[in-house]
Image 1 (cartoon, rainbow, N blue to C red):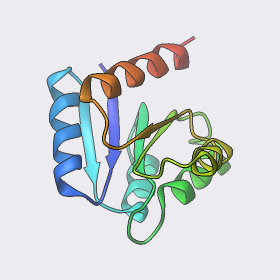
Image 2: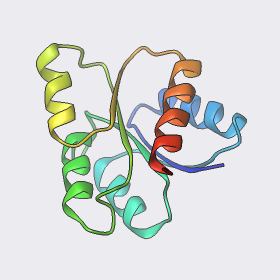
Image 3: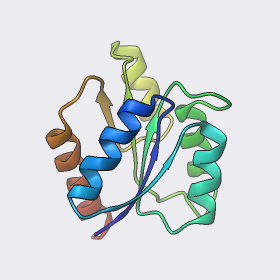
Image 4: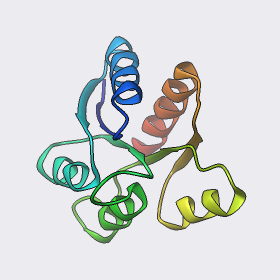
Length: 124
């Protein structure tokens, strides 16, 4: 399965996502802020990143932009997880380079399905 970076400052969401992804057979690297997410993506072989938009130190949008700007991580699939549901927020997320945008609250089953679909497309 895949190695998934999960970055969310809400411990309950981070733990739920980690549990569900581990249960689905994935290895998870979980962090609580933007700078840690960027470091983890650069220092580990990560297959996909799940980033909360609002995190301390650096937003998920900024992490996504930094990942896209680096040749080493420019192709890393990114899913943004956020409570920000306005149309403009979604546009901003995709403009930052996200591959998908999931609005909280979300179904863990839907998250797993979307993650798997992106991983399949990334391997083509």
